[in-house]
Length: 175
Image (tube, rainbow, N blue to C red; front, side, top):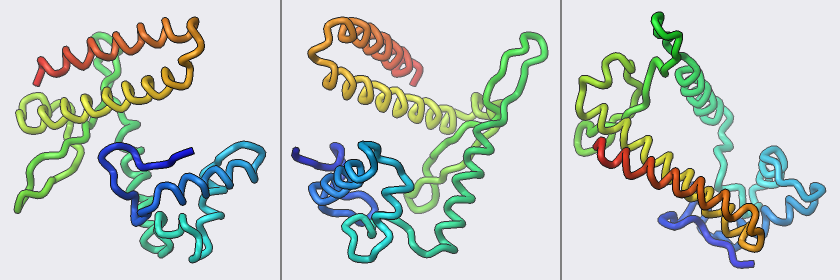
């Protein structure tokens, strides 16, 4: 089997050799009853001489802070507003990434009530939605390649992929 990083990625968090990473992950999977679990990957990456070691944050203070930021993002995503007339739920906050100082990106969450009246933030939200749609399309493409010999599944996958394509075209028109 030939391993490489996904298109557009020449490395991943300090890992430069996808062939070594892929072989290491396959070895971990085989050693664990055919199942590749994140905890097993972390344990295998712990030794400094592991090819996976550079892909992790080993400073516990830094890692803990990054985990708390991840928890904060999860918390923000879990909050919704309920429209009293319809009882429909909508996200209270939407992640945006807009141009910041010195050409960098300023990333934050914006109130959904404010977002629609701010063109740059609205555009950012649409771009994020489009990236997610492309990721979903790629996931379906991956599954389609795996099921190429299963006609019963291929027809349903084709319908799902066509629906995703229609959504992508519609979102592009919103931009």
